[in-house]
Amino acid sequence: MLRKVLAYKNLLFILLLLNSTCFFLTDDKRAGIAYFQEVFLLLVVAATACLFVAWKWVYQSKTSLWIIFMGCLLPVISAVLANLNFGQPLAYGLLEERRFFQYLVFFPTLFLLIKASPTQEELAKYFLYIALFCATLGFAYYLGIIPQNQIASFTVDDWTQYEDLLRPNRFRIGSPFVTIAVFMVMYSMKDRVTLGRLAILLYFVAYLWLVMQTRQTMLVWALAGVWIFRKRIDSLMKLSALGVAVLVVSYLMVPEFYQEQFARFDALLFDATSGPGVRDTTVSVILDAISTNNYFGMGALSLQWNGGFSRVYNSHFYLADVGIFGVYHRYGFLTPVVVLMFYGGFIWVMRQCSDKGNLLAALQLSFVVSMLNITLSNALTFSGDVYGMAAAFFLYYAKLQMADAPLNANLEQVNYGQFQYRNYKLE
Image 1: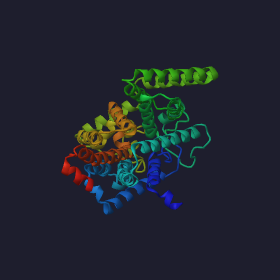
Image 2: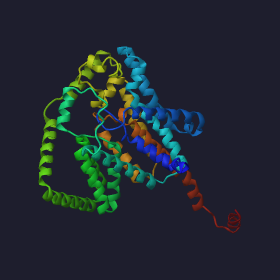
Image 3: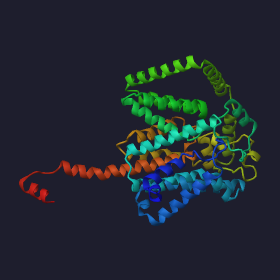
Image 4: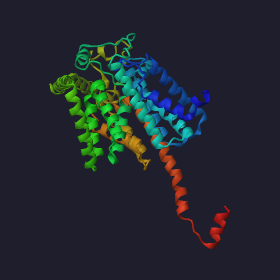
């Protein structure tokens, strides 16, 4: 029994499940196990250290250098700059930037991929199962079946309280995995629209609207759908017709639900278009601060150290809310280099794999769509778990395709002359 549990494919599935963050407790998702994220990060760092000692494959890939830059060098630079500018101890700086270490999940993921040897179709199934689990877990919290974690407490300012009133019962559980799974399902529906796939897609859409409640993600899914079905208008029309039919039937059954949702949509739209808000103030503060500091970066402060930025700027100042401007506050004039290394490096990694199935195509589309919102996207600083894992996927299947290419070329170039044919048969 233990041997089956510890089989490489099972370990790979468990790693992906943990990497979805569905069990982690965070301030924007008060559902999960306290400190489980930090324990998982420690395990990832420890596994990476062991692989560097015992696994020579680590040193045979240029992608490893990109991972080390993103997952090790950047958090250290930010911690040093915060120490020089504010006197924050390096330990607190590394604690604040701990999410960068999520890039290191690349190494254990790559190791398990090589040992388990899953096909792209198998890996896509793992992803879909995990996304469905995340959505179901989110609905369980939303419906009150599983209670929120009442032990942990978070510092909540007036603005966050307003957000909670506007979007109550909000749980962003496994949102990156769900987004990628949605793209996968749409890619599969491009060739054939089935009721099963449509049901899965509508389930994820309901999860987005009711539980995740993220406006940017709604727009991203819509743009992705248009792009995926751009050459298959027939599939798009079938999908739209089936979706409209389901909505009409459900509206006739429970009209009060849709009236409530329309009122919520109107409130969200007003909130998004009602003039300058907290983000605009934060961006203005960052631009002034870095300009005053001669364009040198100032790192990031931890709330655990003297209240973080609340004592320096204001209580509403969060680098996570302003995307690329948060990177600018960390690294100053080095920001173009950091951004180029992140986006250019991952594009290079993706291009190594030419034959992309639905999962790899979905990962690629997710990355490209995030680039469209580069100013407010925090993918660079907070999505190391996804892009570290994705880099391992692309690298593994690229190496697999390169290994198969010479064999296919040799088989196509066999000369069936008299003597060569005899030698070929003897071999």
